[in-house]
Length: 79
Image (tube, rainbow, N blue to C red):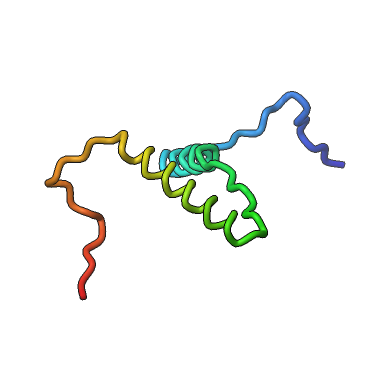
């Protein structure tokens, strides 16, 4: 009879490429950075106020960053 080699004391080796490691770490960081969305109120006026407040908060957060006028957008819109 042939015996299987003992694997009790051996640790399994997992090899990652640099690209796979960066992708895994960036994905987890992006998931942690997301803020949970609040449920929208059932009343139309309250929903509108909640959306306006969210837009205002996002606008204030973006205003903290200085961008030079020469910065180009990632997408060019054509009519």
